[in-house]
Amino acid sequence: MLTLKKFEEASEIVKKVTNPTKLIQSEYLSDQTGGKIYLKPENMQHTGAYKIRGAYYKISTMTQEERERGLITASAGNHAQGVAYAARAFGCKATIVMPTVTPLIKVNRTKGYGAEVVLHGDVYDDACTKALELAQEHGYTFVHPFDDLDVATGQGTIAMEIVQELPTVDYILAPIGGGGLITGVATLAKMLNPKIKVIGVEPANAASMTAALKAGKVVTLDSANTIADGTAVKAVGKQNLPYVQENVDEILLVEDEELIGAFLDLVENHKMIVENSGLLSVAALRQMDLRGKKAVCILSGGNMDVITMSSVVQHGLIQRDRIFSVSVLLPDKPGELVRVAQTIAENKGNVIKLEHNQFVSTNRAASVELRITMEAFGTDHKHEILQALEEQGFRPKQISAKLY
Image (cartoon, rainbow, N blue to C red; front, side, top):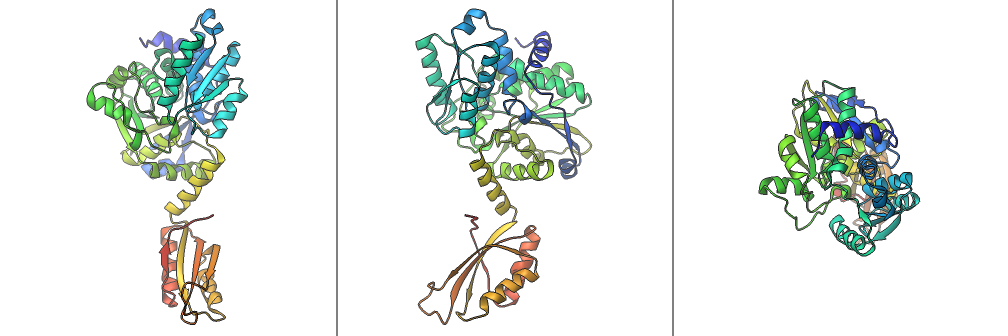
């Protein structure tokens, strides 16, 4: 069982390998919500995520014989790095099975901590099945990423730190994948102060905990297709479910599109890189009435590869109308391109990309197509530019924007 004594023990043990992730008050998110919003930046841990806590505490409870057999786990990335880092600290061999779609940065960092990496399957559940097979075949000690109460105890040490630093906290928001983090955080938070509301947040397309609560038992989703790869889990932990049923006040669902905006918010206002799963708690704030309340968002990790990052930034800028594209038809004669450029410049638009197509029509004297991708300050500014082009007779037609 999860006990206060074990949480206190774990809190002291994990200090050996964790960075002190002090709360950061977010003026931007506070202004947006009307409450006092704080960030718990677990993305700043050595391994880039909170998972080091559960992994290290779990290995600390093992016998020497269990460690000497070698450790094995399955993970989409963050638990993998946590186990690899902790195993190295204890002098153990570690094998990590990861889905084939795992971002390269997570694979390389896991190898960098000395672990052997096996890529298998499309999602965590496939990798877990393979890891259990290898454990049986080679006698390895399996370290479950979430369906383990020692692991959940280690993750719950985050709640200890939050309450010690902000005793008057009203809400704690935490992402949910398999349920280890929310189990530990919610259980300890309620032990320390039953008045604290604990809110779990899942990707709408991988809502395995919501499904389990509705059914009253663990169920397996048909798919877990979300950009929040760290929480793309088809079935939550059986050991976690009773604790979630008892201690979690509400679970909110977040669409992938909302994570894109949350990424921009943290990059631009806090200069922080947080992976999509870690942004679930921030994105969920918009669904809550937090006026006059103090809320802590757990940023569970920051391991995002640069290709994913660039894609999220592009989609975020387009989503917020800070990048948009238009098509205009012009007579094929000198000076028309200059007129378009001048109209955009006078309205403080910034041209990023220009495509001039003289072959859109067989009648070149009648029209050529000009496709313009430009930067604006937001939706209102975009409409000002479109209106100016309209007034000049260009009849702009909005098209899908692409930076490259």
